[in-house]
Image (tube, rainbow over the protein chains, first blue to last red):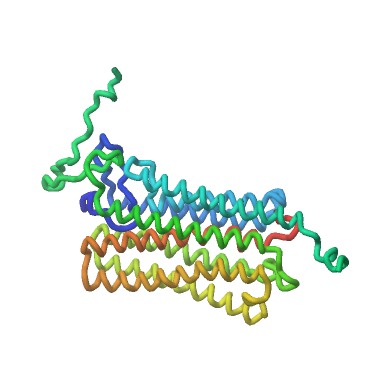
Length: 133
Length: 227
């Protein structure tokens, strides 16, 4: 087994250990298991998303919201298991950057929808415009 | 005075008997232990780029959400999208991202054979995804539902096409990485490049999660179930 320091390639944004402890040494088997767990969770959430659109168990108008929740959950799974984003002290910068990114994304998406829905609401319908001419 | 206030900061280096007495730099994120290793800095810089890419995608998502119902009498999302195709694309990309994770482990193990095998699998699955997407786009255009048909289709092709362009760029990068591992070996700078590639590839799958959920699955819901 190679030493922990050699896991410097791949998607390790940072090592996961607290400042007082020695770095956690994980074997190759444990690493593969971590990826497999992420894959299983991602597949489960994907299947749940596709299932939600077909089943009649979920209240109809709530399906879109359920799909949004499942998508956000799967993105979290990908961030943790594939991108190895952790709460370790050496990962603080990455998490803060992500938080800022999420803020901007929410501002753009919800801000655009909010403004455009209000604009649509306040606009004179096309048929009315035609009659005014 | 509390115990933690008296605590001495950890030594910047830890000598590791199991690694032949090699000193390992301890990174705490609080300034102690000196500057972060280059790998951490490279990953952080690329992470910032990826987040800016995500912000660009969010603008395309917002455009699509606003224009979704403006079909100008043309085909709607429910009439166009084939969810079996979307499921196949999703499976390809998810398996590809997993293979890329296996490639990172192969690089960490310094196994050239497994690095090349897993990268090849990653690339082939990415290529299958692209061909499925290209076939779908060609089918839409052939059926008179090209990007110029309606505002809905313009925003759809802009969003999904932009993701497809990223995957294409990623495949070119992947081919470059395979060649560099072959000719230059596991040099430190090549490994940093590969770290950036794997972050890029995983991030593309995260964006695809948003696309298949919010564009394809929400788009094919019956009109009365749409928000």
